[in-house]
Length: 184
Image (cartoon, rainbow, N blue to C red):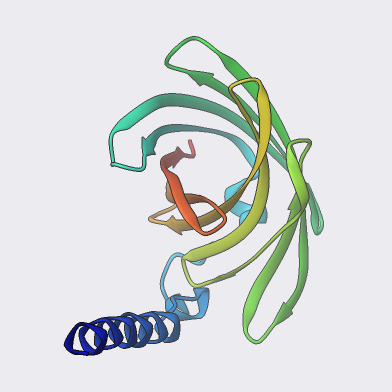
């Protein structure tokens, strides 16, 4: 009976912690008023470059990469072309079609799609922060698996934007990415 109570106490404690964590979710609105104001149609317009790292579940760097980007916007529609060069010499191209959506609840909203994105990426920005979610069709050992991507971007100044991405599958953390964008 004592072990049952201990187990029940543990389960209730984990459930309570999970509920508290769910209540404290960070949103872009938490950054309202932070400067500079991140507007994708301004920052991702023209040539940019980026450098990034991929971390496995344990936090070990498993891949490095450099990206050349070109963003072109016409009104609320944009195209962002990314050319990746990985530390192992492999290359990749991704072309995003981006759209500024109508603002809602004080947030700037965006959607996007690309060839290896399943469905539509959706996100919002406030202040200097932007968050969006999407599903990436990721090649993995001769197969393609769909993984959930949660991107957080923070504009530091007119030239630097930092990005942290968490990659999950069925709620299990697979990897993280860190990217530093540089605008001339």
